[in-house]
Length: 452
View 1 (cartoon, one colour):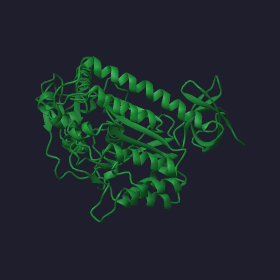
View 2 (cartoon, one colour):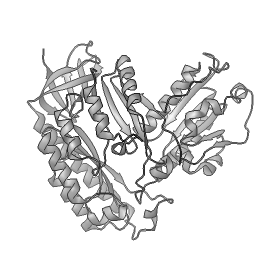
View 3 (tube, rainbow, N blue to C red):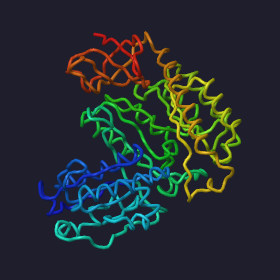
View 4 (spheres, helix red, strand yellow):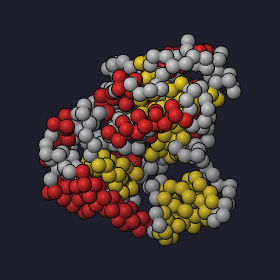
């Protein structure tokens, strides 16, 4: 969807209207709040640090776990205590799912759903002049059905060095897994047009970035009305005349096919790095989760990746303690992940959501047992990362320097295959591609040598 043009709001004069924000949740969430805040800045608002005195505070929420919900409520209360005179606007996934509950929290002035949050400036246009003058009014709720929601583009810098940027090209999900609220909170799957993707990539390159992380709620489900799929986006990217590298943020096992793997293996632009949500290594649990693949399909994908891209980094998402997950089910998951050539794990402890079907699945796994299983997988993750890093010693990789320590003269950055690397250099290498030979492992990164 083309970004709407807004007439600059006369009250938003530099120094006269101040805005701050707080984000909870995923990279897509952060990309979206960054784009929303940028629109305020483009219209003349001054961005101040969260917690400082300002006129409007934007809180972008998540609802993937009950802890995320709790974080949202706590942040709202803390914000009102610390900046009592500011107006508070709550938006995003938790706002989409529980607007009435949020409205009961003292201090909330506006609530915006996942469609309305991209129209905040228009929706509060008439209120802007009064924000500095009025005291507490009744909470205004702008939340509607997402069935026909358009696609809204978003991108944001992932770190302070402006080397890497997260670029959202897909939103929503049609999968309705039994444990997940995302499909309801985000609406149906929808995607950015290929031509707009291309134009945005050129714009990002002009801003000086060197790496783009392609992101979405269900990225592999990218599709347009004229038949373009995710692989078509990758083919287009691979043919662009740009000095950038691209990373795929996350892709479902059933959507990561052999053609995509082959394309990445032959690409000079797309990083050899896949992050794949497995969630469980037990077919019994996968069926109850309503996942769209089997254990054997997942194994096949890992085998194909290593066949075509031996140096590929493979990250895996896993959920522990799903209702009815027995010790034997967990052992299946642990055994599978132990034997496969994966590189690291992101492990999540199952969190009950009242609006999901999984809440009716029994028996529940005791909290302490869930924590024990999570800890075991996190320890396995450290072992797997070390094993992967050991396979990279002696190889030459391309690093984009990000952080420079003036005392140690060490740069830190990531290789194309996601090895966290440090090397000695001068303070003139920011945003350059640097060839580095990986020499030895130290703590959670690899020490390398910059090649001339």
